[in-house]
Length: 314
Image (cartoon, rainbow, N blue to C red; front, side, top):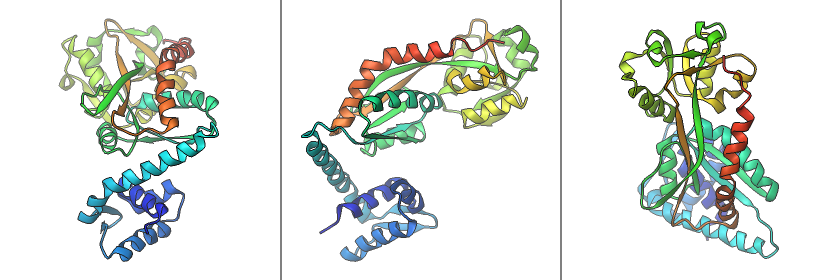
């Protein structure tokens, strides 16, 4: 009979496509992960993974059993959840995929409040691309996703979670820093540090600038970075100016390492969404978290922006 622990190793390795990352996630050694997989393969005389250097991909047999393994693991979680609920205990893992910089700053606040009510629940946030969040939601690898784009799919339920504000930040010694205001047309003469194409911030900024007849090819992009924190650090070092989430820049703004500049006629906001699969069999902890999000999101928006309201404009 197949051990449930071996199936967990197989599923994690299939999701990570890398035995080393699977080992880190499972708190095991890489050799233990390899041995578990090899044990399954030898027991049933079939190759489950094709090894490609440091990465692995599922073989045809591995792809065939993957949906069944997910179902078995999920059923085991539900069984454990039911047994624990007899004693009114709410526990287990709460896995969330996140594709937004703002989401990474938002989730600790949200999850810490949830843990105050349910301390035995273990939240785990996995940062990935927006497409990665959608893929894992659809194949039931994760129960929840945080995205800056509204999802339209018959199998996914998408709810607004938070309204993020995007601010223009400049180095403290920038000419705009003292006055604190500029026109969108002034951007044309500046060195811009940009997020990568397709990111939520990138799309929001270009959509806002379009109303001022400014396109990306009109901007002087000095650097493109795929990480909002790296962009904020580049601004600190005087590489250029940039649009980032105010949540990302909050600490640097409070410490005057960068300055916020208001753009006349440019109010950049985007909605952060929480997404779930409508047909997913949720554990008790996951159901309670979804209900908690609905109950708390209004207060969450108010509390977070109240905490940022005293951040100085240049």
